[in-house]
Length: 527
Image (cartoon, rainbow, N blue to C red; front, side):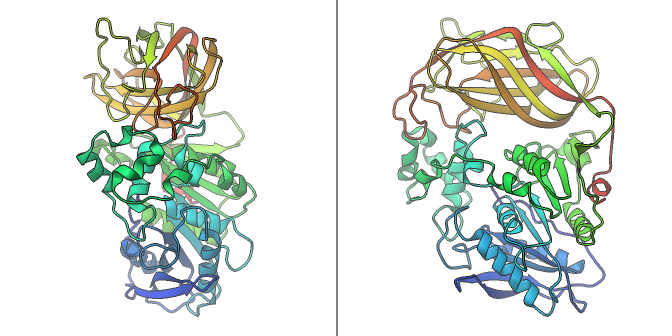
């Protein structure tokens, strides 16, 4: 995960004072380097606390924006990072207790007057905000939490829900931030430039040997398999939550699950963004939201108790400038419906090739290449490929998608990766959805496989075709399943796996907008 952009909150009549650096003592006395920016007007002030491993100094413009709107704003280096001394053990130690000590310190200050505090963060900083919000009641717990593109925990970030390892993202993050007090954001990119096959070396636990610097915590990362701890704890919380994510963010489903399971008033904003909360295409400019202004307005409503006690939100219909309103557990007619695209029907997905294919970890289907090679004589297909006819009219997608198909594998352990791509009338490819599951079925036995593809938010114009690929690998985004039954992280041998997909009874399940409920995202989030 990378640092999300600063949510600069715009201008206000009263300029804040300059940012000052203070040292806030952790429970064991460790001085945590913290930048503080106070409003120009007299207090007491509500406060905003950001705890980050990505350098507090990157948030100075954001702090000034908060202060200009009447909030005392703090950004703190977590223990062991940048200006804060101590050991750095991501996700495992200190974040909850250090966060509680920081918020208790804030409430002791004259400019706070014991007033309300909002815990705010993006990515790892969202993890810090959430564990502090879910801590013991008292002065160390905030009154509201904003979690953007949240990295919920070790297992949540390292693995997909069904087990496959998120290799490329974790290698990049650990190379940049692991086992060091500072950051080298491009460390993996530089290593790959020198050795493009770096991530192919086996076993994966020896990756630091090829990076040129020690990463003692790297092998232990993969020992963590229990996901969902923060989501489960959040079900008992009564604090207001604003969960912000992007349909192109690999942690989007964690954002949705956090919102869906939260016990207090919860709001979801799911935009057409990646992990940096920025759009990857210029035509998505119509979907822009001023996140800084939203955060300020939502915080005021949350701290004043003006939020309705429900779970609601807005999902982008990417590229259209429209947002679809969602409510969890709301009564009344649903605004979406399930649409089934069979694999063996003219109006569904037509099998192009690869009803039988070979998943070979020696030549895996790559995650960084959307092109699909034409079958070569005498060379087995490396994926099952399906294609829809052109859409006769625009289609709005807003909700979960799933691929369900009948298949066989000749190996005792198999990954099944499904990639859904939108092809515009000119044939240009745009990623739409992806999912991967790990199965351990009897070799050669036909089974039904269900692959969740996440929550979609997109308007597809007329003439768009849907392309579905079913493969055994998605490398280097995900580690290669060796097909030997060994742990992919420690395996040293690779073997090909023969696969077969049966079209009858198989289908793509999408959620389409049946009754348009367009909303303005900011007012919808703040009421």
